[in-house]
Image (cartoon, rainbow, N blue to C red; front, side, top):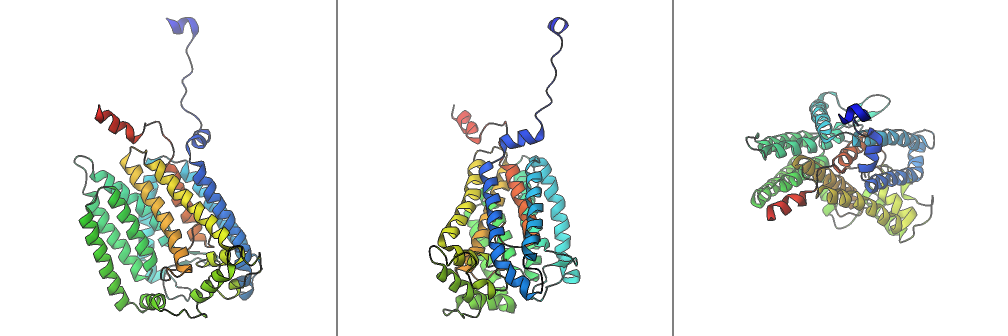
Length: 388
């Protein structure tokens, strides 16, 4: 009767995607990522011209490529962050299958670019490192399997994910790429721990990892050379670690000045693996601490928001992605200050590299999608209801 008098009210099908995304996304994390990318461009302006000169290219060739791939990474991050957790999960499953097949074919179709490890596909105009895309996809897939195993009548997800991580780590070790293998194993261990793994089992897995490390040391000359270089008390000043250590010491608190650093003329990987040495030399400890603060914002903000998440899959996947992101940054900077052996791992969103930038955009986009606020209540509500 009311409708006959006043007419029918229009049904609201929901807010547009972009306004809803803007209200629910973690703007602190997104801002920190954009600032990291900006710092990467700033450091690229200092670190990449010497490399371009050695290769007979235009001075800012690598900076322009970093802007291009970084722009793609930011766009990808924003698009992925607008997806629902269900859509992200489907994307991750397909991405994992494609990346896994690509890594399996690397010994036959890949190239090492003279670095002694077959990790890339050469496309002529660019190169692709499939392990960078495998990591975030595997984290989401492993989280889905473990979350499914907690359901009544669910599959043996923990066992399946363990088999998958063993296969992935084995393929990465064959390249050899022990850094990515260790990072993938760490991310899986974090998800397994949050999903409720017994501590004894985790200790057994850690023992197995140490045993594998001893085996790799004896079986791989590439791995043994890096470990020996790390354990040697004296640092050869003519090595990359020697140049990086000297640059960090020269930088001091305020740095030697913009454009005045010398390490970029000596380090072949100054724009990638040792970009933090360029930052420390030219801008000093202040910029390094600021970079550390930005990575801490991304990790801690994400974990804080995930603590309130009620969906097990979202909580597990987001935690794995956040921890993997933070540990990769820690490994890169730890290598530069000789706290860790050389890994050949980029600094997320700061180092040059098309694959690492775009894969990082996908990973952080997934993390932003998982940490968006949703009309679900908080996990604390469950415990409050149980207490009454």
